[in-house]
Length: 292
Image 1 (cartoon, rainbow, N blue to C red):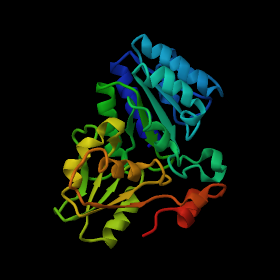
Image 2 (image 1 turned 45 degrees about the horizontal axis):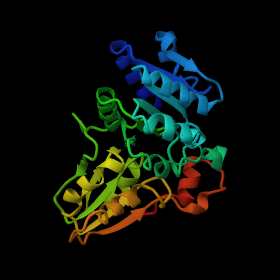
Image 3 (image 1 turned 135 degrees about the vertical axis):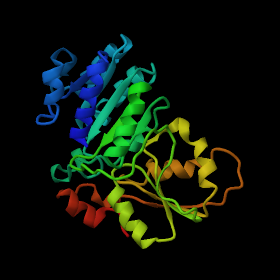
């Protein structure tokens, strides 16, 4: 996803001179196409993520759409106060790009595990979360972000470069992308880089529909009720801890307003026992990941 993102960003920056990319002394081997083509719109701030977010807010206030790019928790938890006060509060067009969703950097330990980022970023009311599951969802998500620049969080997989045959022409916040839709009464509903896991679940639960929500956030809960009430059971899937995650977000939609919806929500998520464990993404997911 990283290379697809940079390729797409370069294409858009060729048309839009207000696109800026800021990195925190990483991304080497990925970000060079942007750096070479737009040296005056590329900044490496060093290992100073809080300054990175503050600089992005200042540029955004002057009319730029700024992308800040770093690994896992560094552009999120490391500069949460700046995102909260400088970016989200002022509703500025800054896209926080996090690489290494879930356990993508599992071999570097807990400091690099992106397993609580949904909980943080969805607590900011103006921030839109973009968590695509494949390159086609990423392409459509970026098209929306380019046209509707606002505080946003783009969550990318570290190594996944998954292309699917399904064409996704357009996408809006809260919209469901169906990968299997037979109008059953049960549903697998996911967000983020769990496409392959959902494929396996779909093989096991053959009478379940399957959909993904790539764009979501605090402001888009209520509109989920229309789709959820069609189902007797919804299984949510995410590579994140349970608390504050995507499944929690879906469950909250049923409690925000008085309704007569009796949909059963069950969730598949990362086991919290992964905290403190070190290993490859494959190894950690096999022990603490989504169970089938």
